[in-house]
Length: 439
Ligand SMILES: [Mg+2]
Image (cartoon, rainbow, N blue to C red; front, side, top):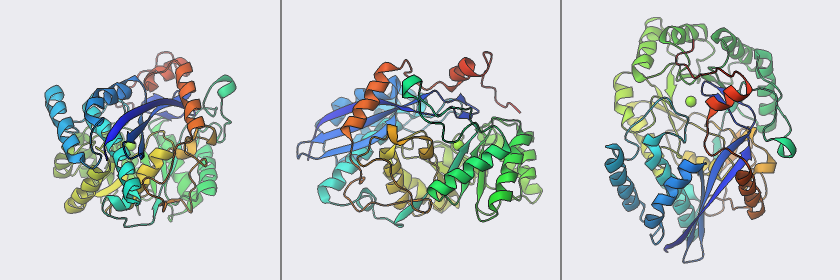
């Protein structure tokens, strides 16, 4: 089986005005759907970051992809590594930064681009051998993958603009009370059993109140995590960790409270000195394999967030699972605005990563049926989990009418990269800048 053609579909999907320390989500999120058409009539698919940068990076890889055997992934990885080394002085996924939004970081461009191709190759391989992707990459250790209720503070609005605007299912969420309401809605609709709050938006005292309200409402059987994306100083991180000692215990964690591994290590030392064992998680200070030894050596990170989209694909996430197990670190999964193809890739790799015990993050509840591009509509959750489908490959196929609508939307809108800071200035505060730490 050889890849005859790579087809790229840049698409736009409605996205509600979600807030984070990066700023504000634009009315549309950008994604790219990759199709690898093979000479045996099988087409492999994947979904990745969108906009000009990710599309150009995939285009640059076209000469390597077209004509290649999708089974020969290690050779393709070697090509990406060599190219990364010549351009950045490091192997693919060998360096990190803590400032740019996921998908716009030039340092993980090679790892991201390879991942999009790898996942589509694995889908093609699964279809060729008649097996689900999780079983192609070594075999599932679970038949269903649990996800967390991923709460955001947000302004009113459901995403999209004008005639292409979506219904505002969750309303404005800028208080503890609204947070609890949105968690209740999400848990009723999806059955989630763990809750994550994206913080770094309101004053830390208000975010502490949100977490405390969530604990009061749902009880200790729903583990809680909060992620301010580095918005806090070391002192503030310690204060929040202290205030939420009880609420973040028992399966929860404090994610990227402050920037840089040294800062996280200082927070950890000070919390431990008070007898506070709350684990620190990261997908900002630890975004590639090269970060892991330092994060572990400094005891800065106790839970590493993987993500097949930028950790170099599914097989590298499995390697990370083993590395975390060896080092005694926990592993969870990061997410970005995405549709059903990405959700299935996340599900398959999580099913085949033995050490991934935390519920994975997903933005899926923030997207709607109107934007979904998989045949049959949105992927269904059962008790907070996505069951591994029995079909070969990723187990989902493209709805080409919906894909065409996504592409049309993309062609109409002016956005070609994610810039949450610009959106914040446009809609909330004309002088807004991302400041780290803010509190
Ligand atoms: Mg995070």
